[in-house]
Amino acid sequence: MARFLAVAVTTLLVLVIWAFLKAQVIPTWKDQPRDEPSFVSRLLEETEYSESFTETGFSKVRPGMTKKSVDSLVGQPLQILQKSGSNIVAFLDYRDGVWHKEAHNLRGDLTIDSEIYYYSRQASPTADWYVRAVTFSDGRVTGVTKTFYID
Image (cartoon, rainbow, N blue to C red):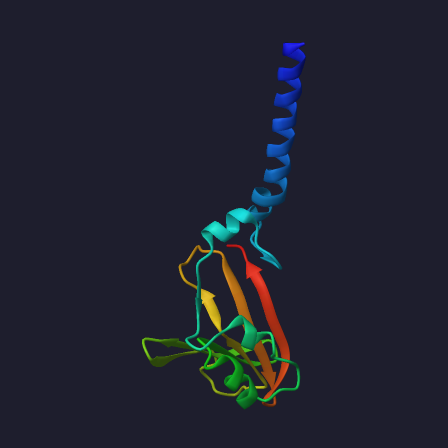
């Protein structure tokens, strides 16, 4: 009887560990966004947020809002990606109180038709992080991104 009980407890323990690994650890191996981070990802998460950012303010951002309205809710972004169709025109990065611009369209023949404002960024090159971004076209919100990126 004692042997049967030991085998049953061991089997149950193995099943519990397998279920935990399947639900929490294995999904973190995928290099893709997720809505909610796993337990292990939360331990490895390193997200840097813009100075005035709050999740409460970000949750109030809606399509059709102006840049000024979004600024009043979440403040200045950390990064801005300027696009013309699917082409990147420029990337602006706010660090140490200064905007740094990396030009991608050196010919200057592309017109900016959308911008993505990032209110969060990866704090280290291999960290998992919470992505918080707003897409603007013609000065109005056309999309809101709220996801967790596993790197």
